Image (cartoon, rainbow, N blue to C red):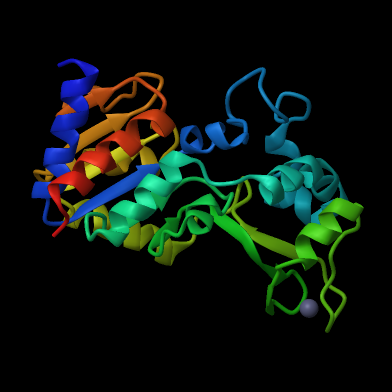
Length: 256
Ligand SMILES: [Zn+2]
């Protein structure tokens, strides 16, 4: 199939699907200027061992090391804008052609694009939990200000260190989100994998769960993925180029 045909076929699948979902990874945010931290030699993870500085055990003893390391990334997250791929998924949802976005990203860009139902497997920075009294605080402004000033944010009640609701290495994934994502994988009849190389479990398992239960797969990713062989459509190109073209056809054909 040519790229053109693959795009057309993808739109057909979306228009015919009863319960389509999307699974996104770092590749959907790289066009927004957020580096794929897992790719060696790119971005910030190459300078420091993230498994050391962003692990929950280190955070308990040296939270200032995490906040110091996180500062440039926080700046990126603050300034990043959703790109055409994020906007395309938000539009699909508005048209009634997407039930949920399951994401491995913690950058909030799906929400900034207008997506409503976003399952964030690796958490987010919109809230923080006090390591002392466990109260949960909204972090709009606070967390980023603290990160940008290099201070460790503390609880206003007990003075305990605040931990962002992003998932650290060594921490379990949020169980409610994980269960919802697994339910979506079992319920969907179409899963679009966008910008994920499917290297990190449990997200990497979800397309296999979906297609083993009869769902069709569309994969749009620069690199090959372990699920390519199971997919109806595979497009090894930039999501920011391809997704808007799929959505454009859906729009022309008329949503449900
Ligand atoms: Zn507290």
